[in-house]
Length: 310
Image (cartoon, rainbow, N blue to C red; front, side, top):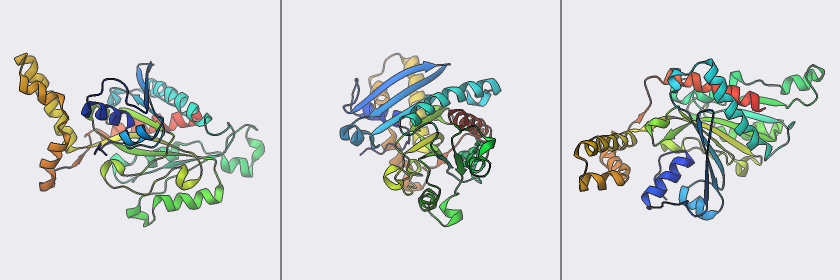
């Protein structure tokens, strides 16, 4: 399997095609693209074991929303993006449960580490209803969905695996579905806090930064798990690879033709760059200097999107 170093199925699809010189769709994978409200939407569907093996992701649906210039969004733009997100999320939820069945929203991550704080920042903004329906049922419309939310923290703080915490909660309150929010890793600088992925296959926390924790999915919890993630970090090898590509593009524009540069630009140099960085412990995980503002914007979008969908 390739070392994709990204949690995004769309990026994995592009990397696999590039490394194998595939111009059409990969066998076992369907990709559909759409544009809505100036947001690019890509739907990657892994339909069999061949597609699963190619991308290293389980069979299922992966929807990516690409948004540009997240540093400069205003309230109107946040509402617009949230509406598109809610439409996509509502469609995925409807494929698994009914309109009134219980949902537990889980915010993964570390509140004290900004690039990993997306999940914990979203949870306080979720409109929870389970307690109201239980203790004051007449205060809510009859078709209100029971929603609860939790941010379980991280192993280094609690000493407990997130999976163990969620297993206990699921066994006790018996939700019909989990929506898990987490920060992701990307292979592209452009996608940092500018893409949202919705997946109906669950999540393996920490996989994108080689700190894999126990899988959170239907296989491990017995109920559908929708993972909603946003890339907030990229490793140094990816940045270096992107910078080399940009440098080569600049040289190509000036030189017009150079056989060596053209060949170098066509290949994926990530593995070679990583191998050069790792011996000296230079393969750092990097996040933008504006990450505080980006996390605030994205947490608003995710919270509003979830609330509208539920």
